[in-house]
Length: 120
Image (cartoon, rainbow, N blue to C red):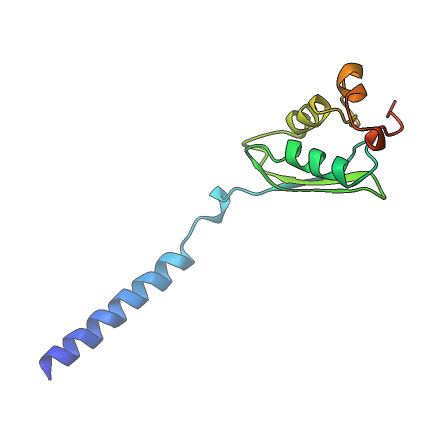
């Protein structure tokens, strides 16, 4: 009987400690993400795959490009990366963004269906 009381008491102490710890967590230290919408030139599903692959660098949690709107929705950790770094990577694979234009030679090597109207 004493053993059962001891076990029950120990379980209650452990559970109470877990709840106390969860409630006293300092939320000011939590890392938050940033969401941005970025115009990216492209036409097709091959463009979509290339843009999203280029965008998924360290610090990016989600990158989804819509071929109809030409908008990349980017969710990233600003303490790890920046929107500019992502846009530079996208331009490096042949797709113009709002801030960075792809090199003409790289753009020219894209498949014909991927030759979008260039962003000025």
